[in-house]
Image (cartoon, rainbow, N blue to C red; front, side):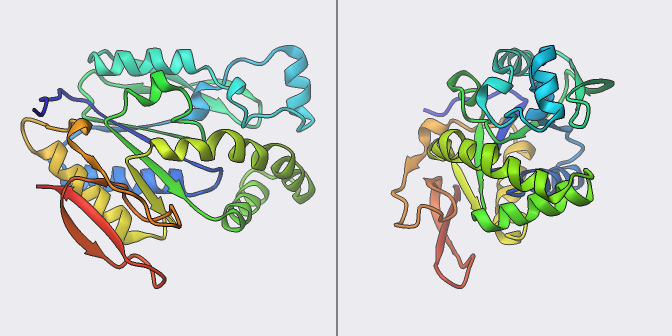
Length: 264
């Protein structure tokens, strides 16, 4: 029997570095703001939960020799504490993280006690069981390695002022190995696998339409135990891997048909 869930609705979004997570979050948030009848939406970045570095670690970071993609770089205990407070309807104040100074800033992000939807995005959002079990919906953004590398180079060189050699060195030394060892294995926990985001407008639109049904309907019913798992096809990159009740066939690429399922 379905359980009636109280707000807020928690969404976890994971995927490799520069896979399009932030862009997908922005699209989802913008649509919900416009169409969700005044619902409040907040997006939290996993970068806000980097742990404080020691003096020696800070020296390594300043020389681009610290692995920020490793699970040990994050304070998952603090993240779990924050999510519990949000679920219990408590307000939360988070300090934003300065990626150039490798430390928290005085600037804060406030999550009000009456927030309706909270989205958490990051490369290791599903890594720790205690954290991923709190999400009502888990989305994995899938993008091929070449695309992610190109996007990361363009972003870090043009927006962060890093030199090309430094970006490539850190990618092959830290980013790529961490993705393969820690991020990619968590794909199996996703309720939804979204390929080619944010360019996959059809997939993002279908997800947002489903979320609109959830946040606009009263009461909210989103018990994942009702969902029936569907075997993925051979590519393991096809759309949504849970059956929500009825089939809607959507052509999301020229190479294969994806089957997207939504609640009855």
